[in-house]
Length: 433
Image (cartoon, rainbow, N blue to C red):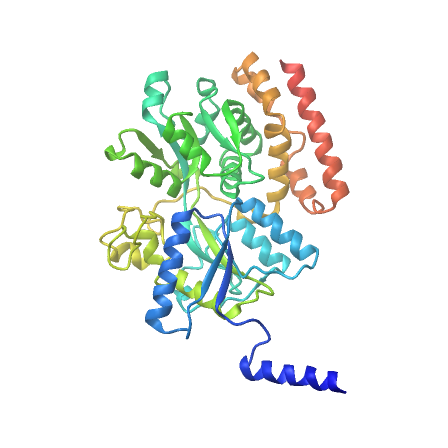
């Protein structure tokens, strides 16, 4: 009797202290992100200022950042938690490829995050969705993809200046290309998908294979390639736009050392989203953070540090989601780059890219990353155009890749297929050495 009374009393006290909620106090927020430290610091400080100025909460909200993983690794972690039905301690997923968020929404991992600010974001940009129609995710920034290069290395080695994706497969670039494992880096995976869609499945695999064969080594995180290009360890690499801008700004000398080109007709501009996980412990704080990121937080992306409403320590140099900011931000670091007024780019299929995402990353990993040394030896033996076509022929067609995607979450199917691909790659490269 006493025990039941104590339980009832405890429940009543909880209800009195926390009316209308069964969760913990809203004084904390756990965010998982692939973003670099500058973005995290600026958004944490800006969020606290916004909460204080708008008096949205009575006490400060402490942010806990979960970092150190690429967006592909974050995707796998979240998916494994939901498949295993483990309660999540994560509130917000901030950043990563849009395909991740489309799949999160499709699999039921997200909860609605209605936002007044999101209404100012267009529904799509040249066929690419910028926000979920059910408010499950919203684009927090825009990302473009292109080629970053080191002018000094190109001049010293007498290498041509890259202009399009296929240049990465040129034999002159052997050992001078930077690359990342798409199983860990969502942005590099996206660039691989873009190369395939821009060139078609067969020619696209020639570009991917030549690029990876030319790679000095294969990194694990997207920021590694722009750093290597900036240091002159490689001459060129496929890089997301804001990483390139950061390195070019740090190099100084008005871009004399480093260059960046976006192959407009062969690329796509995509959103870098934000979302709240289903079962997030701190829903109110999560909604406030999403609202900040999509409203006042947009200014952090486009303004220079020290400017009114802009970042305090780091110029982020990213493309905002709100079209009005491109006309109003006189201090913008992005110059006249307005993706909402840019010319037509690649006719990109988000549906195809999202559907085959996991299969494609594993296929690239098995053929071009795990067997990288053997691939390089075969490429060094003969780097002619005819050899590249033979070297690059994948073990499955595009249609077969899409069919495999439907059953890729079956561990038996995935493991048996990966073993076949590994054997296929080793045998082919050995025969061509």
